[in-house]
Length: 421
Ligand code: EPZ
Image 1 (cartoon, helix red, strand yellow):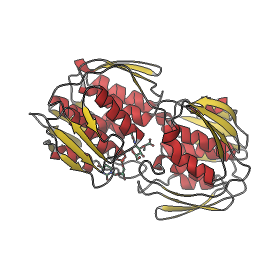
Image 2: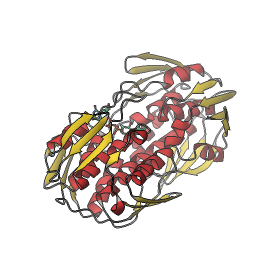
Image 3: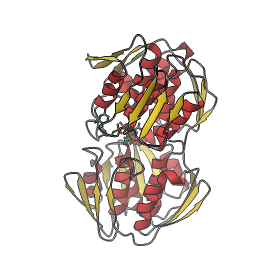
Image 4: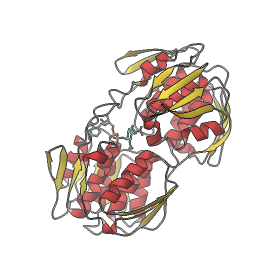
């Protein structure tokens, strides 16, 4: 198994480009199922999760040509509608094929994703919404079996809780349903906006894009026509992670190909910690101070502070002067990085869903274990600032969602090497 060896306590400098957003690319890839026409996607990140979803489409009978940041997907030859456990268990986001498969083919079987390191992550809201749209759903043998022989019909969906994946599944299902679907308490993430834009460019009428109420007028069973290609938006979480790398190493570094609006919540928090920014068109430079101030964070849905940045900010807070409070409101178990950060010398106490982070003078290199994607990047950030050498193990989590992490950090001057046990 690969691990990363990082010699820390070095300043970073220079510029890197931010890749396309994994969490925007996944629903876009799933949405290609809504058409029998080929579509080219550009600016895909080179990460394992994207390969996994493309492999699933390939298993369903699609023609997929994937090279670098581009993929050409032709779902005209798609024959199977069964998303098997072997793929879904590797990546929960495979559940995103449920809505588009069901609405296009009138039936499908998708393995239940099960829990994961950050929490239970049920899909009850996805299923309830599809049932409201006329689907007959049965859970048997670990699979969700869904049927809607005459197609789905529009409905008023009121989500009890804001769900990104649930909103995406309903949007895709509604695109080919009969009639109007109204989604109340919809997610407003930039990734949702990209999906809505993709659907409307393909001729589906979508209202309320980027708001909490989205209305979709379905095509009544007609497959969609793409206008190629689709360019995936920049990864706001990758950008935020590198801004944290600048902050924790007291550096000045520049990110290119970013959407500033999407990272505003992170900029605000870093500013409150004493960082300054120079912002240009699609680029941002962080100027980090010698001494960071503590920060209080409560995770929330977009445009609030993203749960996907909670671990990375906790890493930065370990070296701030004073006590930070970080409250996780979205997932019940997203603190697996706490004990690993403490192994590096951090002083973090957990009480319920809040972490009290007392800033320390220094962190010290040690062996640590990655537990999920963002927890892993938090450990890498801490290692960049720690004195001595840190080995971050189980980095397959990182490979799922960070495009060329060590290459980009190396370009910024970090001492980081990928090694094999
Ligand atoms: C997406 O997951 C992201 N994944 C996650 O990023 C991100 O952390 C999350 O949204 C929140 O922003 C992708 O986009 C592929 P949710 P998703 O449905 O859609 C509960 C990363 O590191 N819920 O918005 O699965 C759920 O348990 C990943 O890149 C239900 O109760 O998240 C959670 O508490 C990790 N029932 C809350 O809602 C449901 O049916 C929000 O989850 C669905 C969700």
